[in-house]
Every structure is written in C-alpha cells, then in structure tokens.
View (tube, rainbow, N blue to C red):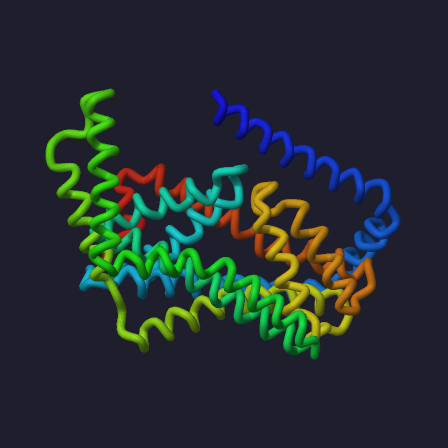
Length: 342
C-alpha cells in the first residue's frame, strides 16, 4: 500500500508538471508559440530526410554497441536486424510508460535476448555495461561541448557531474571481479532464501548454488580493450548523431547552427530528461532544450520550432517505429522469425 501511494504521488507530480508546463506555454509563451508555428509553416522540409537519417544512425550505433557486448564470452552472434528491432521496441516502451519505463524496457530486452540463445549472465552484463558506456560517452560529449564554449568552469562541472554518476556503477561492476565481494553477496542471498522458504516455502533446493554460478559467470565476462574502445566510439556516436538531428532541425528553420554552444545546449536538454517526471521527458525536454538554445544564441521562435521538429523525428517517429515492430512481432505466428539469430 505504501509503495502504491508513493507511485501515485509520483504520477500526480508528473501530471502536475506536464499540466503546469503546458499552462506556462499557453499563458506566458503564447506569443512565442504563435511565432514558432509561423516559423514551422515556412520550414524547409527538404532537411527532414537528413534529420531522419541522422536519428537512424544514432539508433543503429546504440544497437551495434549492444550487439558487440552481447558477443562476450563466446555467445552466438545476433543478427544486427534482431538487435535493432529490440532496440526500437525497448526504446518505445521506455519513453511511453510513466515512472517505470526504463525498468520495463530493461526487462523486455533481457527477455528478448535470453530467448534468442544469449546466456542470461551475458545479457545482464551487456545491458549494464552498455548503460555505463552510454553515460561515459554522454559525459565526454558534454565536456567537449563545454570546452567548445571556451568556459573551463562549465567543462569542469560537466566532467564532475559525469564522475558522480559513473563511479557507483563502475564500482559495482568492478567489485564483482573480487571473490570476497561475491562471497558476501552469496551469504546475503543465503539469508534471503532461508527467510523466503520459511514464509512461502520457495525457492526450491539449489537456488543458492545457481546464483553463485551466475555471479561467477558474470565476473568472468570481458572484452579485449580494442573492442571496448569500439563500444565507446559507438556509444559516443549514438549521442553525437542525435545532436546532429537537432542541428539539422535548426538548419531547417532557416537560421545558422550555433555550433559553439550546440553540444552544451543539447546536453542541458538531455540532462533535464533524466528527472523522469514525464514519459520520454515530454514537455520537460522541449522547455529545457528551447531555453538552452536561446542561451546559445537562437531567437525564441526559431529555437522552439527547431526543438519541435527535432522531437518529431527523435521522439514521435522513433516511438512509432518501435511500437510498429512490437505489433508485428506479437501478430506473427513465429515471433522468433522476425528477430532471428543468424
């Protein structure tokens, strides 16, 4: 009950933020919104295919990075189309569901990759390391954008914030390589299993040994350093290509791209999305990214119009593709045929 009440409060807060944001735009930004709509009416739509191409490249880079990580430990290679399909579908789940979208998306990807012959410890390791490299790549891009502005203090803040986020995750992954840490986790699990058996007579015999084997397998997974560098490069391109999609949207409005402050403005908008108040940062990203672009030198109407075009491609179109893939897989008599292992 307490958990349900907390979720209801978070949902209420998300709704309040969304409604409040819309009210601010409707009242305080009525003139700006009207001007932006006028700008959209004069948009050079010839740039739209290039924006779609950039966003597709961003999604492909993320899928390729995950595919490379899923091949750790000698696992059977997945066809790229298979990983791409899971990537689009998982993204659709993540940005569509309020509050728990990321967790449900992670569980979906775990189930899909496990069903396709990848060992469960490999799937867990690949998804976790993928998140770490994505965060690291975002930090590098944010720091690079801050340096491009010529403000060393901004760069220091960007790197410092990234370190705060990355250190706990890296520490947890590194700790699994030490037998002493795994033994501590096993002792903790033994107590939890014993407590569960007294209450509900589950799980059955052998659960403790299975978990210890799982941790040992997880700790043994690794890639050659060159492949880690490739994963980092792909993770970085995932962010950079998405930022290029924003740059193309700005170009489509007929205004010059503020390259010097673009990446820092983009980083500010994406950081606002991590608050998780609304699905996919809906309303939050639009407001934060528009404000950041205005600070980077764009006028208000071009900034908002560019953000709306960018979100049309990077949010709504990607969601549509993801849910279409989900529908195709669900209606197929042989789901595995749509996402086959080569």
